[in-house]
Amino acid sequence: MERRPDWWGSYDRKTYRLTAFFRHLAFSLSAEAESRIASQYGAILSGDAFLYLIRKEQLPAIEEPRVIGLDDWALKRGKRYGTVICDLERRRPIELLESRKEKVVSDWLKAYPSVRVTSKDGSTEYAKALSKGAPQAIQVTDRWHLFHNLNKRIEQFLKRKFPSGIIWQEGVDAGCSSESKQKALTEREAKKWQFIQQVQLQYRKGTRIADLCREFSLDRKTVSRYVQMESFPLVERKRIHSADPYHPLILSLMKQKVSKRQIFEVLQEKGYQKSFSTLKGYLLKVQKQEGSDQQKHALYKLPRQKIHSYLWSKPLEGPEKQVIHQLLKEDGQLQELQLLLKQFQQMMRIQRESDALSAWIERAEKTGIKELIQFAHYLRSDWQAVQNALVHPWSNGMVEGHVNRIKVIKRQMYGRANFDLLRIKILYCSR
Image (cartoon, rainbow, N blue to C red; front, side, top):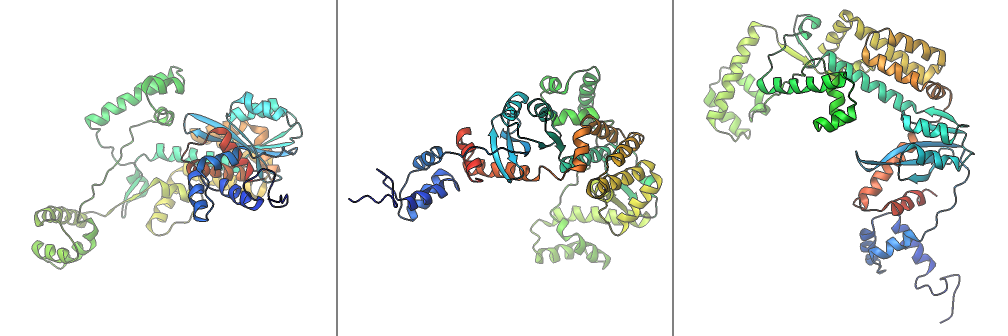
């Protein structure tokens, strides 16, 4: 048979075009899915053969990067993490490391002295690695992570200040009803609160959070939440009744003085499937509530999330807006917090001046809100990188996008991809 070097290579059993088709499939799907699709086109190839195609692909050498972004990604969530490094100028990932440890990252950086600017999240591990591996590079803290960190602190503050949300009565000041009497703890709740206090006691003695996790068999986030609690969080759980979807209809029928049996018949026509005795108990409860509501003003509950959104300048309407305005008038801390949040947004998006940020930090430290003070200390601990975030346009947005891409590829391969295979699939598609 005559050889056609423009169609296929020596000893090849596939044309260049068919090989390119297989390669495109190999880097787009999982191996078994690729095999099934290829067979539909009359080109039979096993899943293992597709993996061989991926592994024999040579990645081109990394061009000297000048501006890079780093972020971690989970090999096994909560257990092992790696590092993805992206070239922000060329807008593509250039390396996937199997660890996020300082030594591993700094060793990679030492091989590329051309790096001049680095974008990162608030990780102290990466800050140390960048200082050792690329001391010549400017470190820039990602602005989204600054907003995210502040948002978490505000959430913690509101949870501590309003553990059960805000409950108010129509015609009564919100501030008075938000400080409603706490219900007595049940035996089970008292036992749990005692356990939380044991964790807090060990923490105040100087025990590290990691050691507390091992000692009490708790997750790190749970321990962090426990050590910040000042009182037991009372959660009101509302039981769902089978007649709840028909509540407005039941109220209108009761106002018309319709009997319980007739209400039952009407609800059956609407699709209610429970017995009359089940509905009767619900009707008595509704009747009792209606009688008490006529004697006193209606009770309303405002979730913390509504306050949280309003503080970040999200508009509200109706009675909720009035209640929050009343709260802000009566609570100096909330007023100061709202003003500081507006100033922070303006600084990060419009003003971008380091002097203004210094003044903002000093003002935050004087508020007496411990969550804001912690955030201010965090900004001071990484001050130069935070200042650079105001000056330089670089961010970790693209890196975060590739972290999501890594998750998709891992799930596509059922989480079974070895690191070498995963690395090729992540880096090849972008080159």
